[in-house]
Length: 471
Image (cartoon, rainbow, N blue to C red; front, side):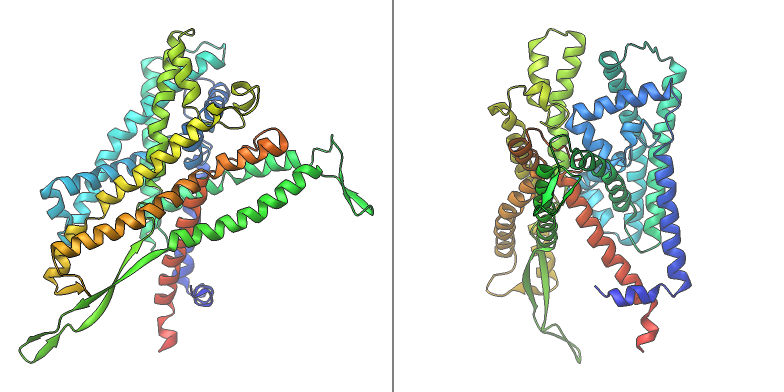
């Protein structure tokens, strides 16, 4: 990164204008996160949503990427997840349908059409998700609040319209940010959503740290600090571990295998082409955080089914078992679900979570990384890997390399996803209860990935702005 160039570029008015627009959009986004959906009593729905967030891991994850929109029952509750889902669906269809694949290779015109179809698909998905969230909210209110609220057709229409509009507005704001050329708008919105939840973690840590009911910290017998000594040393060790985790996250995210591509020398008329070398970088984690999102969504389905069964039949054993087994162990449910401390059941959800992350990493990488297509393109361009025959042999070589990278990449991604469970386990052993962080290992990975991506975009824009200074 050229940090000196970035700071120097801020003298340029156009650069300052672009940064100002992005910051203004961030302010608008955070403002929208506090506008409630126009339905019934706002406080009752807010309290019911907070209860839903604390009871399920999926609810906590959705609240995290929506910047607290789920807990606040805000108009942006649905967030940009419909757009992300539509993008993934269109991406999968592009690989499955030859006509779409040809369109994606048709330059800027084809990409614009695909982007337009992605936006159009986002609208019905936003409507479906809005209806699902409202339905789940009513089910949550039945068990949480004694206040009876019967929604009319008008209430449903207004609420679904407001939530769908909020999702579309976020999609539009994200594209406006991308147009400024200094960041990826959609990724930045998710980044801001996660960072905005840091205050929740800070409040939880502060409450634990300054609880001196069990004594204060004595420093060499000279004076005492008004902090809990046990929590202080735990947090000190946790802070050091967090710095190491950030370092490792950056290394894992940036890790890649470089494959050298040679191009054969060709003579056309009086001109010679080729006889050069290029590189093909293969990332350790090509799938990004998509496998973690898939795993979280997959494991949330049995828990939601269990909650619906329990709501309809409170004494049903199947519903109770599904809810208990497929609900992530955390600070909010630890004392009620595990009154006798950690049991074997505590490890069921983390083990399934880890296995699904590894499985989905292999699955998604196989979809987005087509080794046969890459080998064919290299052969058409006269490129080859030294010591490997072009064509089918190159495809098998790339596939074997990607499988090996996936082995370490999937394990790394799985361990990152396990960070909150590992942290809670340590705090249970040392302090008797989990810490209950508002940000997960997935959140940390998203923060690191998006921060590095945006820094690279900002660096590229800064080099363009200050290019004349180096002539």
